[in-house]
Length: 444
Image 1 (spheres, helix red, strand yellow):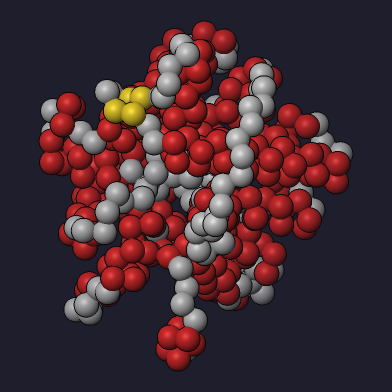
Image 2: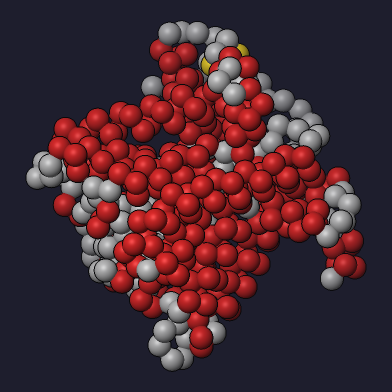
């Protein structure tokens, strides 16, 4: 194996993809073991692959109820896959190298840089250590906040497991839950009015979706927002907008039958969870089509770069919006906070948008044709998969093998990232030996 790695030089992007594929395959094999399920015989490869992919890609779409189908061992495997997928396969690998005392080489540092979207190689090892400590503290706080309520309801031992599982799942934006013991596939609907559960889960989702570099900025600069990196400023502002505006819509246009308090919690929770988390406290199938369409758009945007979340990323949406504003104002370049956006970033954002829309729409059209389902329903499902969200209108368990395979591929694409896959296929930058003549073309 070492000889192969020496003769074959993998790019950072290829290593990231191979790492995710290896963990998914290992997770699938573990979930196929006879003692991974409550029923004798174990899971089929199809169910195990779907569940492992959904776990590593921190999506939350399931074909089997997590609480009632998987045994304690199976649930532990799922939780471990969620943790590895949320932190990033490469991040976990580097942490093991640091713990074993091995020297971190330049190639490992470059791969880590790509994995967490760091601006430079310098300080990667220090940042990795900070990530580990931050994850432990944040998930620990979430565990302690959820423990009293779950312990009262389920008993201390089971309450500890439930608190740990949901804290990790929420922070990693995975959306897996163990509430199927109340009602299969019910998610957190039983807690739609619980302030503790709502606030804790929402806080974990938002913090996990901000990104490791944004945490580092907050740790270094505290409340001095002006000192933040431009990217961190964009992430924080975009995140607040994408939480506040949809929450207002949900409050006034959905959940009309709920009381004021429950309506407020459900509106805020659905606005937060749509950003790649996958939990829900309301009946999504009962929403208006306009509400479902808004959720589709939010799911496609997703979280932020270098975070536990997937999707196109908040920065991609912000760059596209800033570019459109610059065009409308007939300005030469787009900018944020007095800083000009590089042309390369705008090109990358446009390419990502095109790739996501193409795969999202194509996948939905194919599944709609195969299953005979309404297009809006399948659009919701494919947006949830490629955005690594995990929300569903209840059709996941009814899909055939071909449709599930489409969702598996979309989940994988959404987690590793569109540009990562493209750059892995084209490992070297193609530099043109000459430039073609320029000629104007009218658009719009």
